[in-house]
Image 1 (tube, one colour):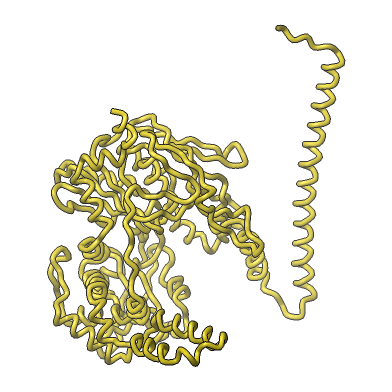
Image 2: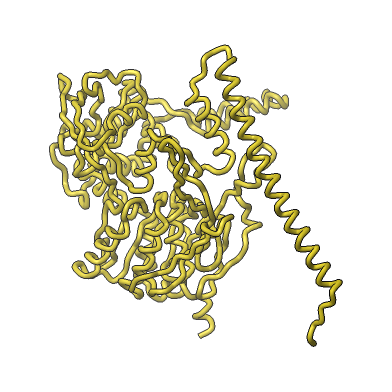
Length: 561
């Protein structure tokens, strides 16, 4: 039936439209007024403090703390970078910085920074710096009393500039001087790739900063064309992410052209984007397993989630971090930059993996994780159930063995690090990383070093027993249970020899990784860690069994056939 509009109806609609528009403008005007009002108040407070506060304030420090507190109330990823911190932002985006290419750590006993790991092919390694070298001076300036960040800032600088670094090397009598020229340090995005066994390729991808898709492509083509792999493991564990476009490009290697992979949605239209595969893939058939853990975040979750939602790979490990937010840099006055969260991203099933709700905080102002009970069910292309709001849950969950308490203290007290330093001084060369093994004699030497260091460590069981004793005393039943407490305390007493024996496998593994790193850098440490890797074992098992692989990816479809 044709609808007939009379004059009264049209007039009413016009009035409603005008009123609605007026209310909209009024709300916008009120919001603009509130922003302007509070900016004026903030400016006035700073001026009053500067003029009347009893002590002279540092405007840079005071206002920066105010900015950081404001941004902290939003989410951890919205950050301000003043002009002097642009190199930090550039490293996050490009994965590069001007420096010497070395990881440093702080030795609490020496109260100085120490070279922990020179990067292969970088200035620190090329001039001969080694793990364990204690940093004494930079261009004659004593580094005593400076923390790790201060020393790191001094080591970094403009590309092409040089300086003299004085170090004290364990096992040498006199300090050593090294002339170092700063270069552009590009951290390796694929520190290792190779054939694991029986045609299974392995690529370790540790960042999405810079141009990892190019390096990944070269690695994959080398494995496929030159080494004849028939299946692939992509290791995204502890990969904190980076550029979204790079994740899309890598996914495109294994998915057809024209496939929508990611959409972003924000408050303004410019934040809404759709990312599709734009190129012809490299291989749409090769079986893939992706390793993930709690350190897998952001762009890593995009890659893993896309491959899961489109049933292109089996995801293995533990649940990922759950970062479903997208940041973009915005230029600010005086050379500053604001890295601001502008949108959330959604993968092919329609889900967002964001785990922490920063908008709705509890009474203490703390942002909490979205409960599993409030997450929603989505479906992969083949009909498998997946959920939003809590990262990527693997298709095959591998229970992670918890490290013993003694391992934490051996690492924290630098005993494993120091042993590896002494080992390297005694052994100019070692076997290739693939075949290196720590001997029983070497482990006996380590045990002796630990004993001589008067090593002490807290046992969680003893702490819990102490708490239980205090509770029993408070409740008036300690006296009747004294004998039981005494017997249990005796059983839980520190027995260093027993613990070094009981946890020898895990301790040897950590020592071996630290030693191999001294000779074969990051690549060697990855090879060593893969020798006893439960996630990798699960990946090899599923890739060898193609029936199980297909059943994991398409259980709903297979049930219908």
